[in-house]
Length: 202
Image 1 (tube, helix red, strand yellow):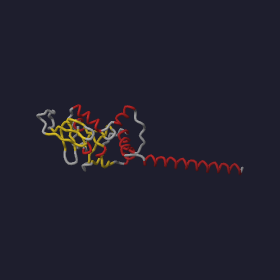
Image 2: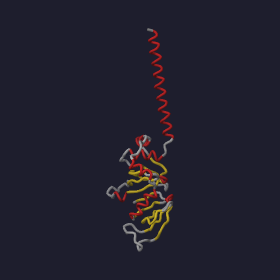
Image 3: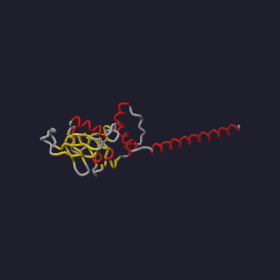
Image 4: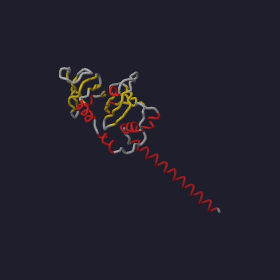
């Protein structure tokens, strides 16, 4: 009888020690995973969670914007700007592309912090392609469409049509909003380095 109690006690201690070791192992694995996480992974988790809530972002020009993120690319994200009092504005007027390098901070609430730390599973193949597309590719698409854009830079806004998208800069034909890009409407040209672009409003 005593031996049975002793063995039961030893078995209970062994089980408790094994569970504690497994718990410590899981905690260490989570610490390592979080230590390897980059900000892009956290943005990816936030966009993958399908939250309808906008992200509050501080940009490199010192401004704050509210962005309802839609797509996350290799070095950019796109979405809709949420502008107070602009509810009747069309989606096209609020659409924007944001280089990830222009994000200086993200203001999150507790739930968004939790969502951003969630592990993101592998993307389906069609989303994996978007994940590899860089900012120049997206801007080239806008260039092909001859879409009018507003490039927000550190200290100014340049509005017009993208004439060319090179490896590290764009050529912009500057013209007024609402006018098509015709030589007679162009008031000048700007070469803008991609690194200087804070936000592209489409």
